[in-house]
Image (tube, rainbow, N blue to C red; front, side):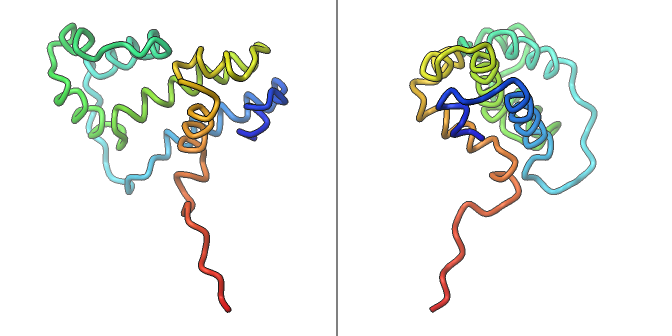
Length: 146
């Protein structure tokens, strides 16, 4: 499906399916299931600000200063709450921005740029990294038996 998106052959239903799969993959995470602490409000506000400015790749300095946190503390709070590094969330937001552009009929190269990626290959790697298969399946092929 990611290949179809990058070749411009993605219809609305397929784009929605891709966005849902990416969101589900992010929500599932790679961390083992464990009780999560209550999410700090400052983390939620920082997430909202990141979501508003994701394609622009906002600097974390002003964002965390507005919440009275250091970059390190925000990253730790985010990881404790969601089981993912903060950078994965930012990448996820950028992928969603690029997929939205693809759904709107933007050319794949321009969609990649709209998501803050350098080119289509960069976007393709990010989509592959956020796909459900990357979170639950091994990325290495099984050794052949001869």
